[in-house]
Image 1: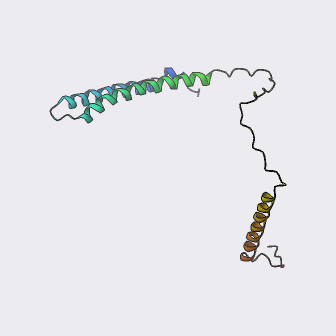
Image 2: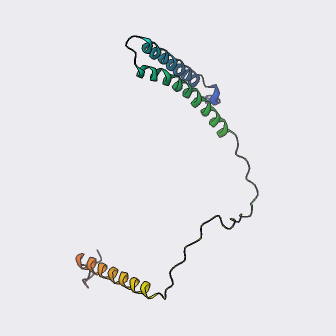
Image 3: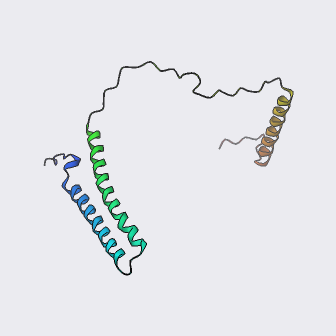
Length: 141
């Protein structure tokens, strides 16, 4: 049994029929909404729908055309890669300057870092005690 021949995306009868049916259906619905708008009970909502349905029809055609283009691009072989190029330099002034760290000899910074280290150590000690991990007995399993 031989496989079905590969058809290009723009030559698929079922897809073309679907797009035509959707297009004609959307225009028919637009006409129906326009007739409803012109009737005695027509409202602005009917006018809005009458203007929206042609947009839906146009979108169906746009989606089909876009699908065909994407299919063609997928079938084309990729362009060969160029020979290795040297990395390019980023011109100065484009990236923001990196922040500099505060000097370590600042007494306020040193005191604050010691305070944070003390808080961290006490927090770890509290977690160890609450999890009962300070026991010297070890269990392997």
